[in-house]
Length: 273
Image 1 (cartoon, rainbow, N blue to C red):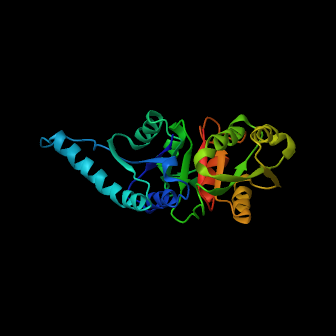
Image 2 (cartoon, rainbow, N blue to C red):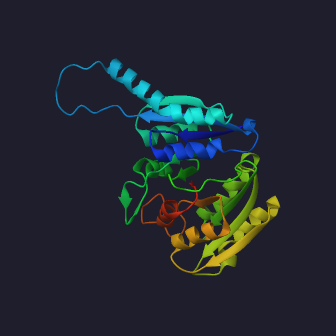
Image 3 (cartoon, helix red, strand yellow):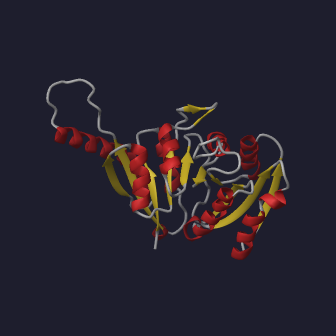
């Protein structure tokens, strides 16, 4: 059974870059079912005015959504992925998360433009809300990010670990992706304080059972900066990490380290809920 991927598409360069990530897939095409999704928000009427036909407004929004999907769908179709184009009229973050749940998606892939500052770092507001709401991993792509060289055939994945259950869950997620993501070279990284042996113990147990080799790296310093540095030095294709961890912002659903990594990373970052 193919893995369903929700490609959230708008008219931004980051969105097209995310579509290029999927178009570069080098595994068997039957392993993926791509849903190209565009969400249009209905306008809010703030002041009384001339009567507006809601049906005409919806029709115009649906057409606009179809137009925004065309470049990404053409790119995916040229790569042989046969995307299914879907337009929804709703609140974007809610509709993207709900579509992923309804279709039993393996992941959401979407671009982020770096708008919407939060505590000194930024992610697109829709991307941040999707990562908050989605029950599946959200793979974030910025316009200038390096893309995986052989997604579907072979990928080098960096997994930051801090000993938390949310961090270890990223490893479980990777194991569930094995059928479509390709052969994995795994680098586990722990940024101190504390011993890496304890922080990586549960993840190593999962990999031992799965008989997957891995390497462990230690670093000292600001976690997000060190993770981004290692991704560059190791030639990582992806970073996959839990969204909360031990360093989460108080009351935040996405941890501060995860958000900073998604902003600073040179490669796509999958945030695992």
